[in-house]
Image (cartoon, rainbow, N blue to C red; front, side):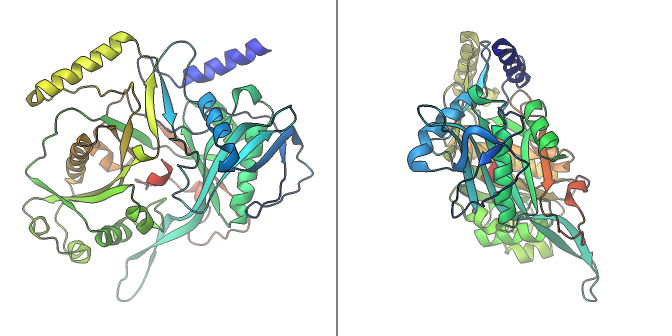
Amino acid sequence: MARKRERRDERERQATQRAGQVCIRRREDKDVDIAQSDWEVKGHMDIVTVASPEWVPAPGVVIREYDASRDREGAEAVERLCDVGTSSGGMSLFTDLLGDPLCRVRHSPPFLMLVAELIGGPQKEIVGLVRGCIKTVACGATTKNLNHHPTLTVSISAKVAYLLGLRVSPHHRRRGIALNLVQRMEEWFKAKGADYAYMATEKDNEASLRLFTGRCGYSKFRTPAILVHPVFAHRLPLTPQVAVLRLPLADAEELYRRRFGATEFFPRDIDAVLANPLSLGTFLAVPSGCPAAARWPGAAAFLAAPPASWAVVSVWNSKEVFRMEVRGAGPWRRGLARASRALDRALPWLRIPSVPDLFRPFGLYLVYGVYGEGPAAAEHVRALCRHTHNMAMGDPECRVIAAEMAECDPLRRGIPFWSRLSCAEDVWCVKRLAEDYGDGALGDWTKAPPPPSIFVDPREF
């Protein structure tokens, strides 16, 4: 039985690998089990007490809220055991949460982290964990016929919960712990009034998809791609036909609300996102000859008479939240990467596409809030990505730039990326939580066709 389990775990790990390839991807729900069981309910001011006779508790396991004062080391140990890796000697990607297991949810209040604690042995042990957060987002749009504005577009909002970071220790799988953690978190979501819950994983993560789409009632919803580009040792040239402006915070918020407000997953608290210290700014690309390039008129005046083509992006400093590291690379790979960087530094005018040092802990900048209008919008997005690359050159610990884009987003072709570093298809799964949620103008969001673009919240990347 032990050998059979080891072979199964090995197949799951190998499914995340590509020969000679390490993808920068979400670390969601990599190691989970799908056996049916339940939890022991503990009372807490922020936890809903649930009694369900059809569930059988996992023997000796308690699901409770994470306590940083006593659970940090145990949670970090589970993270290390469940990190993306392989025992066959190939390359693997490890993530360091910088000593803060809450780092990926603490910027999205309200949030909660649950742990599964084994209490039946001689010593208590953390064997599983999950995080969750709740926010109000746009989930569609409708039009209102008004005399003074007959084609007014109004966004439809819903309270949405995001479930992330599900982990179960490899030594305690197939006991229903993952299922218990998900169900317990969903009870908290419902108590907070969430209409929907969603999660993200990779398309080849069969164990996670079986758990969520099979046992938990989620359905596959969206398939964006994580596009990753290295930071070179040379600056990327910017076309003189495009001017890049940094927007004031108030103008950035107004522009996003007026142009991006009806886009799926656009957060109602976009002001909090843009004002977060991790947000490095919002940047607008316009034709260099337009009036806005010479003198910024403000968001309202700009949108009243925009140029033929323009684009906007924001940049998030993810390296202050977590770091990554590629392990298991052979000496020849390290040597080739080192040689490419040396040549790039010595001969920057050749613009050699050098491989950054990913074999030591590194961080990334996330490009989010990608929006544009006009026939040359994708070219303006490309100019903004180059500007972000040159920003990252001033930060020695930032070695890659990432963006997550919808599958059919027309601006996706403006995002430069290396396929060997990118994750071609993320899978977002969604579940309707509110049983009495009226159909209204939206209907059941889980059945809505995919839109051309989505908003990726940087707080949850």
